[in-house]
Amino acid sequence: MRKINITLLMGTVIAAFLVMMAFFPQWFTDQDPNTQQPRIQVEEQEVDGEMVKVYNQPPHAPNPEAWMGTDGVGRDLWTRLVYGTHTTLKAVILAVFFRFLVAIPVGVSAGMKLPLFSKGLKVFNTLFTAIPGLIFSFIVLNIEYIRNLPLNQAMPIFVTVLTIVGWPKLARQIEERTEIIMEEDFIEGEIALGKHQGQILKENVLPHLTPSLISWSFLEMGLVLFLLAQLSILGIFIGPSQGAMVIDGNPQWFTAVNAEWSNLLARAPVDIRAGHYWLVLFPGLFFFLGITGFNLIGEGLKEEFQKRESRIVSWIQQGIHQLSPALYLKQITRFKKYRFPIVIKTTAVLLLLGFIIYPGAQSLYSFDGEQSRQHLENLLDRKEGQQGVQDYITEKMEEAGLVKSGEDSYVFSSEDGNHGETLIGILPGENWEKIKDPDGWREKQNLVIIGTRYDGIYQGEERISPTRATGAANAITLAEIMAGASEGLEQTLMFVFWDGQGSQVNIEEPNRYMRNPVIPTNRVNYRYLDLGYIPQDSQRSLQVSLYTSKAQQIQFQQLMFDVQNTLDRNQLQYHLTMNLRGSGAIAGLSLSSLFSIGVGEEYYSFMEKETPDPGDSHETFLEQQGQFILDMLTMTEHFD
Image 1 (cartoon, rainbow, N blue to C red):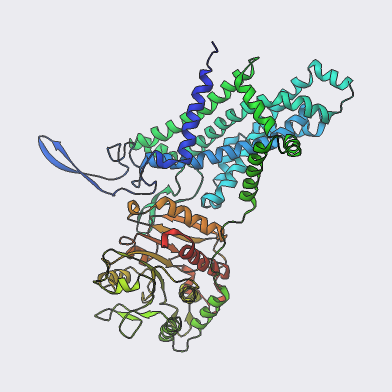
Image 2 (cartoon, rainbow, N blue to C red):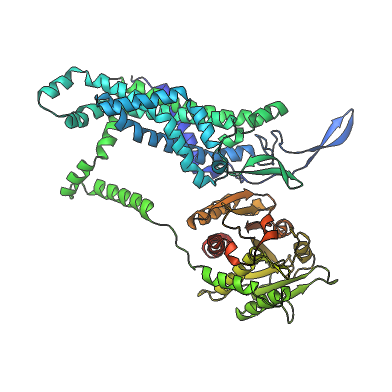
């Protein structure tokens, strides 16, 4: 009876469990990792024989609704661990891959006594002996610029650092193993037969080295995961953070935006002192499970490779043999006999090449940055001041064919006339007739509100703010592009130009709109897109905020992915925040919307000292903001 390799079996089961969790998180949880439970939970407890109400704030301890508890802002811990598995394993696998990519040629060359590689490897090993990898990683990854990068931009930097600190030790192991192989008697025989080093490397060294490399790859994954756990305790994790518990505009502490294992341990010292054991215990268990699983596979494979006859070794050897390009070319010459494997391999190669080469989805419509720039200059050239700005916007809305919000005007004024004059134009979609007719609809219709502020462009005769005009210029351009779209709109678009009367943060105006809306909210499910102010050249990135109070009604994780994917496709430098108040319009509308997306800042201090020259505004961000909004409207399912 063949003895079962318990070590390898247990490791494989754990790894398979993590892989399924990474690729199919919906199998393990039906919640969204970004859904925040109510800030205050009310429970009735018996105290001294009387039932009293107890008010609990997050983090909430394990309970029937969240069996692992919640984090500091009320997000379900189990769900964030499940969804974070994909990001964490991706970082681990990429780091190990690149470690081997560097370590194999260097280690093998050093083991075959090539002086340059041998001396170079000693230098790197000495360097990272003097400077431990943990300290080096902490110093580099703690740079503020790296800490604020979006996940997709931070990942390559993390992988690079994890590769740098780990490849010398791995290369040293490969060097030692290569030296042992080179001292074997059969190597002397090969040299006596006249084989050069290249032939010996290909036919003798690599075949004997491969079992060790396979075993070490899993052990190395455990080491990388352990390093990520150590960095997490020091507050270093992959992806950006955002302020949490914001009071008077200042965050009391910071929390991670993306779900990932290491960011859940970033506040471990604070959580331990506060008695929030679940915030340390459960993420720690996931790290323990991953590290143990990879180590068990590595040790189990090492045990298998030491056996004279092993099915697993045979399977690995057959798999490596089938991946050989030389075998593939030979099979092609005998197509009739090897038709099936040729088709499988060719399909796999084409899919891989397509994945690498294919540029991804192209924008359906191009945002005209020059057109927006012209609107910006025209807005700044109004001789009549702020009244001229209002007249220009209404003129362009009428030219684009937008429907007036009132009977004969785009102006939406409050009854007392003390809250400014918001401008509203409607671009009808296929559902417009149902929205207009209170008796013609049976269910809520979809509506997209695109809003920006147009006030404050003129602060006086000599004070003109180009930055305050950027959102209005882009909104006008978007209205013109969507009005001229070749395909009919499925849902109605409402363009809103808020009048905040020059204040830094305008919260009252959107709330007033909701109290007396143009379209009653009981008829529509709406999404809100906010065009904030565009930064100057000195700003490194554009603020992007994503907010929803109804995450249970939409696929919020998919929305977040689509937002990030669209931002990356447009090569926009951005800083993403989640469920953190953005502009006043987002604060006023987000609680009733399915979701709100803000692109741009609510206020910049430099606007108080701006010159009238529109060159002060960042032209690249102007175009990228418009293209992002346009792509979200036309290329994602969230606006269908």
